[in-house]
Amino acid sequence: MKLKQAGFTALITVTIAVILLFLNHYNISTVPPLVLVFSRWLAIAGLVLFGLKKKSLTAWILIAMVVGAEIGHDYPDVAMKLQVLSKVFLKMIKTIVGPLLFATLVYGIAGHADLKQVGRMGWKSILYFEVVTTIALFIGLAAINISQAGAGIKIPPAQHEALPDVPPQSTNDIILHIFPENIAKSVADGQILQIVVFSIIFGIGLAMVREDKRLPMLHFAESLAEVMFKFTNIVMYFAPIGVGAAIAYTVGHMGLGILVNLFQLLATLYVALLVFLFGVLLPIGLIVGVPIKKFIAAIAGPVSIAFATTSSEAALPRAMENLEKLGVPRKIVAFVMPTGYSFNLDGTTLYLALASIFVAQAAGMNLSLGHQLLIVFTLMLTSKGVAGVPRASLVILLGTASSFGMPTWPIFIILGIDELMDMARTSVNVIGNCLATVVVAKWEKEFQPSETEQSFD
Image (cartoon, one colour):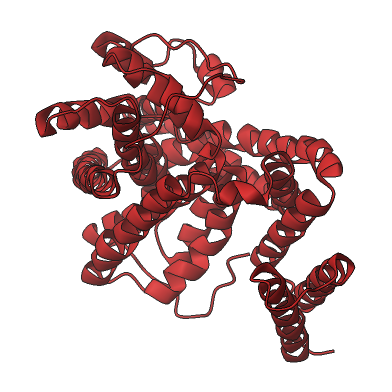
């Protein structure tokens, strides 16, 4: 069977499953449960057949997400036990991030010995990050004030899940968190911003020493980067299993019905993120001259990984590799991508602005615009460096609630659908950082898209 025939078969089987589900859900016609289950698995068989012919990692990741959702829906007990597979995948990815960031940043800075360009990329990146995240912040603020999703919520009679006790963060805590005291500890804890600071200073120091002392370390950094990219390719073969297991666990312990609960808040976030994507990021890409089709092909795999695992860090190695294939020089990818993971959290910034005002609305606190702005600007500072940690924004939200005297009980309400929200905001984080990298490369006039068709799997 050819690829086109396999695609046609998958389309027919999926269409049949969707029609049967639609007829049964809206009581147009009663469809026996066994027929519904059979139609869904037949659709999955069609997708698997398409995957076998397509031989694309991105396609297999998307197919695995569908299979995982079905396993979580039909066999929740089995799905709960599959979480270990997603944790294995995340652990393997996390072993890549520290060495990869160190090697690519050091080689990118010291290998070209152009410290002026490093400084130029630095201020351009920070300027871009702050402008875009500020726009995201205001979109989140506007969205929650329009939808009023938190208004009228009654205090629940009892809570069943304990939240961590998070002390308020002072300015000193935020500043000290940027700088590493022990690079091994920073790597072990997944502190991306601290690894970036250490690697930049190390790279600058290496660029300043004599050539005979610099070259051995440069060769080591270059070789380490190449090895870590190959390491990434090996680990990515496990990605469909890890991603499928993550989705299966999510559906298994939350159920598909969770989509109905708190729909207004969930819809507010998704609509706000779509407005940000199509109203801010897409125009930026078009104005700068980013090849949109190639860009989407390059980020499709990393974004699907981020969506399923709710961790931007899981998508970082493949995103860096695909941006190089797209035509961004390694020195720019190595500098902008990891820096963006600490300063350019578009989705997280938008979510935190939205969620913090939701908490205030649910608590019946009538905040002035000035008070709301103070809260969200504080969030923009405290959210730096959380991209690699799943659900870390929840901890930031707790700290903010404690700092501004807001109750924590509305956060329990958010907790029920936080994972679904995390999927969307993490995906936007990855898209925003990939676009920022291409934009900086265009500004530096070093973006060189390949004339030949590139495979991004």
